[in-house]
Length: 88
Image (tube, rainbow, N blue to C red):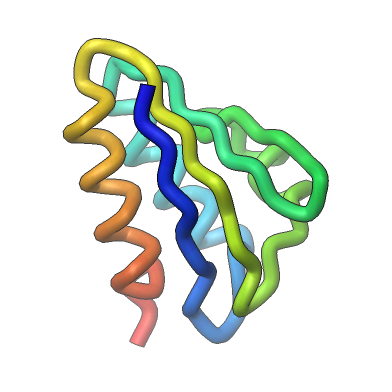
């Protein structure tokens, strides 16, 4: 199991478009990915659960990946967060 704390850096936070990118990315991997923020827990493959995290800009998110490709998915999720979900 890998764990990493990331920060939401894009201007709009973990909104619909950003959450959809997380779901799309995590759905391509076999490992289970869970995000924790604001006292809530969300499976990274469930769009509504991600939105319910209410992760605004600056929110610290703990990401947990567990499975056969956990290293690859953690690297990809870290890149997605650090790149502001591709929003410029």
